[in-house]
Image (cartoon, rainbow, N blue to C red; front, top):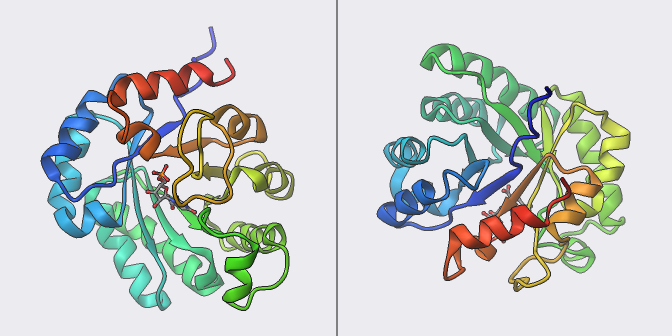
Length: 240
Ligand SMILES: O=C(O)c1cc(=O)[nH]c(=O)n1[C@@H]1O[C@H](COP(=O)(O)O)[C@@H](O)[C@H]1O
């Protein structure tokens, strides 16, 4: 019998509170596919905090620090991040080819240095909190989808494993970058949840239908009265 499809829900545990993050991650262990720890958590709790949350949940960790700097600095950061044995790390695609190539190579080196499995290295294309108007204010006037597509192709050509994109661009990137290129999709909102600061959103079921491999979902779960029940509810909405 074929293995069941892996649970695609990575819960974004965005809090500076180590005890809360640990308790929440442990509680979600049976209903989530992974935990995403980002800038807020890492700035407060560092490498030790990541280890604590990872062992409390036993789930893979997406360490979302969105590196964007000169190639040498990003490479050093990716090597150092490997100490936390993350399943996934990320950089900003706008850092360019040389930076992304350095990041991919640094993941090989970091995995060797820290004797861990090499993490997937993923690049953020255009943040899901941004729309056409936000991009124009930054001087990028072509359609958001075109910007995302070009950055996704650059990411693939730089040897990375996939991108962070919105569900709106998922099918287009899948067609352009192939079946093995990982599509990690935040900006996911069930019909019953608030949109918050996200602008390019889709429901969990729509995002999976569009080709997302991983759904990154934070506040609809972590802000719910019962986060485990909220995660279960989203899981039940996904196509079987
Ligand atoms: O890289 C990310 O994870 C990310 C990229 C992006 O374009 N948009 C985005 O929302 N994220 C992250 O995904 C999470 C979404 O959280 P919620 O909006 O609470 O579901 C946050 O932790 C963001 O930092």
